[in-house]
Image (cartoon, rainbow, N blue to C red):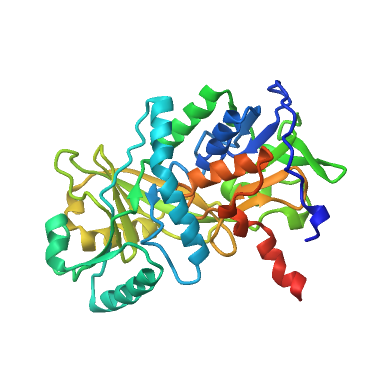
Length: 397
């Protein structure tokens, strides 16, 4: 991509004190869009956040809230692991600031994460994966069955051990959405849920605002596309400027434990499922991974697969009530990594494609995108996650 096609973010946009013509329009009121709006307001820019549905209703509220940069590290994702570890380092201050700003608890829990091996084959795969993770310098330890049993006595007997990730914590994703929305509004951002965007307006090759479904327009100096799985479907820009993001359906079951005597305290990853205990006794069991577009059906097969996988590691769940079944749509990119930074259309910035890492990467996404829009340059942490990485093979050919 030629240098002249990149937008110029080296000087701050002018401050326009108008709700109808803000400095920045953010499309998407998930945790990333809300966090960006909050950070932009702290820099003095006027911001309007638009969402097609309720605040946080895309993937953010359904997410397990796992801050899992270590346990989920996979070969070929070393750059993403580094970004995730950077985000983990930002989380304590980010959570403390949100708490101080809003007085709302995020439900941050620091027990860590357990990755279980049920069979000999599971153990062999987990041992191999653990060796790879250790080669990256990640702080994970092997726990023998006796120590695993001491920490989580309700797990099924016969589990051959687990990898323990002490720095992979969790946060209540719904509480995070509420706190970020409160912080953004308190700072002066305008939140407009149930306001679908039909198109990004482009004049003379530059994004200049958005057109809503009802035909009204909102001019803006910069448009930030943070619409998650819906990001590619927003019209107005050239096809090559639409981020390669698709919906990846996930079904989640919420069970009810006694908060005074929970069956589980750690986040647990097991073959076929994860289990996330909340302070209030909820136990999230998730999540299916389905390439079914924006389908919202709760299916018998999805529920059966999750319950069966969870029951194999935590048999006591058979006595727990089902409180809810929900569906979310992860925004998956071609390489399962986020798309962060400027587009080929000046004035348009991406903050999308986070797949399963939206909650983890919320602090770094908010700060880096706000800094970019405010003319402070590109944070080195996100430099390798621009959309240009998808165009490189075609250009080389």
